[in-house]
Image (cartoon, rainbow, N blue to C red; front, side, top):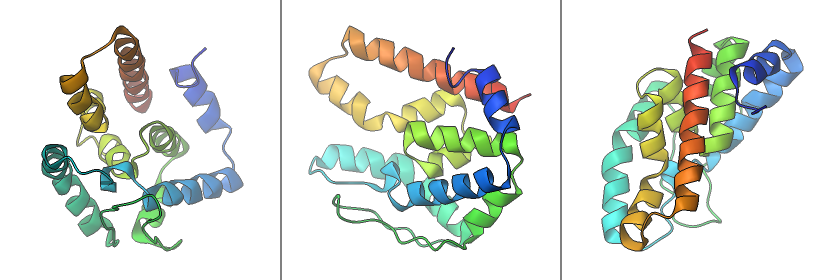
Length: 170
């Protein structure tokens, strides 16, 4: 059974205690330090422009809502310094176990706290999340082609996002 099935997510979230919640909140904050939508370590101007255009509103809304300083990262040695006590951590602590599970699992899959937050907040649906997470892949596919192996990976990822979306409706 998939670790992202509704049943698996329900068991995971139902089993969380206070210590688990604190650990998850710390892990999500750590993910935020190197959120993939903030990462720009390549020279392709066209791709950079696409990413800037598609991500800038999400980044600026997130920064404004949680009063958190985030910068675009240009190499693997950089990260954002996010204090352990911030408005986003406070927000996470208000979530019920099901929502906290969903955002945590999404962060693990997408490597983007920002996009996971907007999905949880119902500002983007699972298909939009998939498209936003895969901007770089789609760009490369337009150049090199779309192989069957990637089609299967994409189908599986869409199913996971759909399952998490259904889990949040319970």
